[in-house]
Image (cartoon, rainbow, N blue to C red; front, side, top):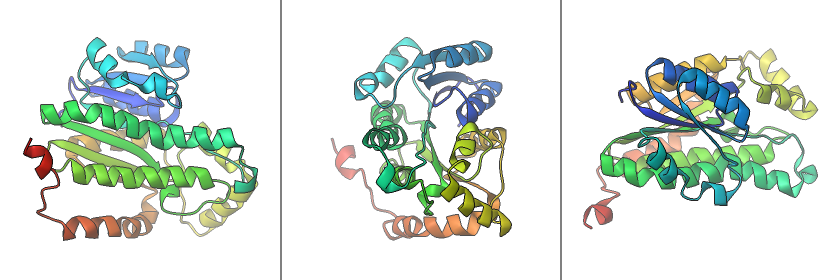
Amino acid sequence: MEIQNACVLITGASKGIGAAIARSFAKQGAHVILVARSTDEIEQLAHQLNGSSFSVDLTDPAQLDGFIERVEREISPIDILINNAGIETQDFVEDIEEHKISDVLATNLLAPIRLTRQALPQMIERGRGHLVYTSSMAAITPAPGLAAYCASKAGLSRFAETVRMETKGTGVHVTTMHLGPVDTEMWTRVTNNPAFDQAQRRLRQLRMLADVSPQKVAADAVQAVIKQKREIRHPKRLWATMALAALPGRITEFLVRGVDHRIHKNGD
């Protein structure tokens, strides 16, 4: 997809990966729309990037209801939707408070589902669009202290795979980013969890983990949209593990190759 003059909506855009993605797309000439709860931060960044901002609590279904329609009415049709917002847990399952479970699932899984559902009809009608999902290594590997987070990211990855199959031939493309350690505040919080920190230290000793910068992730996201790549994987040294995790989905797509999943829709 051509990035110049494209309209890109990014959730979780106030800091970290989301802010880096916004800067990278703006640098390529896109109009970026920043979405987060922190009003001041996204307004300042949007001003710097000559973009737009919307303060939204993604855990609140009422605030998400009709949100994409509002954005497209006030700003522009959305060409690229980047579901990047995410929060983590740092407790063993028996210690997780109920509201934390709800917030993690609502932010990491339900909000991307809801926003995708709203954006897809217009993208399909226009015959173009790109959906990007910020998932995690936690979608394919267990991580002590991060059970709810792992569950939400596993659900997000399978959701993205299914959307890819459902939209085949429509002009809409899907990219999933499976990320390990990224140098952000979230990663610092995660490693403050003693159980997880011991596990990640062991993996580092085995040279299986390596940090990546938000800027590198953002640059890869831009290239994924331009080249219509289906997946971004970091760290590269765990490529084989991630490839094995993706294999069942690839096999399923191969087995149903040639099947028109939208035949009932196309016949309307």
